[in-house]
View (cartoon, each protein chain N blue to C red):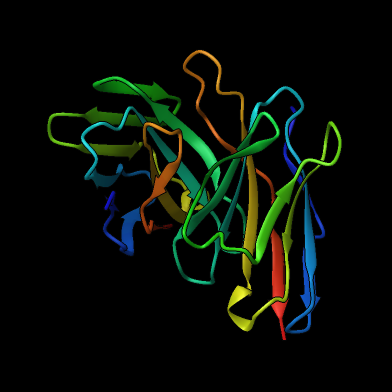
Length: 110
Length: 115
């Protein structure tokens, strides 16, 4: 059974601080890794994709991938109240099917 | 910027009725997906569609469900004889799946309420 695990939270972070979200996955053959943001009642919105070991930065967001440890993380710098949402980790298997984590609820406190 | 669209945004139906949920994927994308999310739960994969046929389907996607691409733009999910437990958000997604671009982009969803 392929699984993606995330801490459900809520993770509470002061405004302006760094939010760190983590995800582990079970399928060692996974090749593609994604972070989606989902506001309550809305659809998942893609914010980062990462395919290779290491870091990938896009604005205030940095995704980190460690395939040996089967670990993906998302860092959000200078957190804003608008970053408050549920963050979903998704991992693509060899058939390009996304396996989803349950999401981590992030709360940014002003 | 191109986006996935879905209609209707909210569908209310009685148990046992058939519903059709509609999606227009991003125009140059090649793979299409349906997902559902029951309130407060994980996003669940239902089915993927490529080259006018089902590519993969989950155990949720039983004979009650079907998908179709009736023309060059629309992608539909039909649920026959709806049950109370079919109440959920249904999301359509599409991906280009070319080179290394496996990113899936989601539509706004259809909230299905079965009474």
